[in-house]
Image (cartoon, rainbow, N blue to C red; front, top):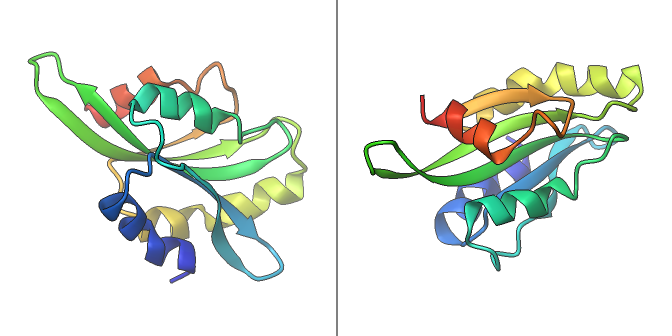
Length: 134
């Protein structure tokens, strides 16, 4: 198990971290934490918007996002979503690297939902919440 996976639950369970941006380090052959939330923003949607700054059209990343939301019946929930970001300007070799590690990442992290995005117009807080609340 890579360090990012070993530290994953500790970061989310013991701190106020709302997101982790994970990068595949090709040279080391591991998935590592590239960015983590500083815990200053506890609003789920505001933290999500802050996380979006780390996703560009030139990069591929995995992101673990802690989402807080209210169900239609008034119940409050907090779930962790995992998604893969595929920047539209990334090279095919980089896309294949992430495609090849996808099953490992998904099986190593216990999350409520998983999805792949390649457009920020599709990647919204509301979309992730709707996927987690099913």
